[in-house]
Image 1: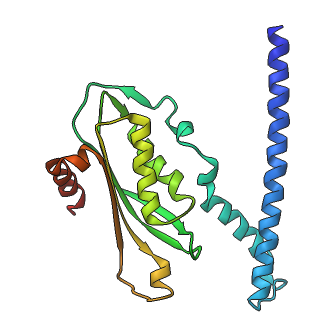
Image 2: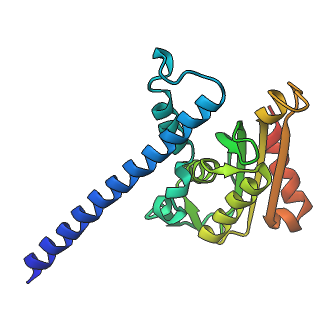
Length: 211
């Protein structure tokens, strides 16, 4: 009975895997056609050599740049949260992030700085960078991205406090619109002790913003 159940499970899993592949291939084809239309409407000859595979490449690139929609916090934090009698501040700074502005579909990029005050639980340090990756690989605004990262850490670890600061350059300001080359945007979210305690917040900012 056990062997039969295992065989049925693997059969269903394989069937679901094929269905997912077919669905992904169909989505990729739709995005490729959309890029072909965009290039044509811009006045380009989509049949010239340099553009023959551009719609497909662009479609694959867009799927990668928005892969965060297919990932969840539970997936990456599974077995990565540990019981630990540590209550001092944990900081991971200068986490590279790349995202797409949801208003113009052009990039913004920069650094994320994260701190939390453990409440008997700690997480693998690389997982904080993975959380940044999940939410940045979606169509975003920086304000929401900052809050999503802080909220995800707070929910997963239930710490005494969480702080997130993001410094980013937005190409929608650099390449178009006001075209201000040196403008950068800083957003922050402070939860728990970082919000309630000025000294804790000051310590975080001093340790994070020093170069």
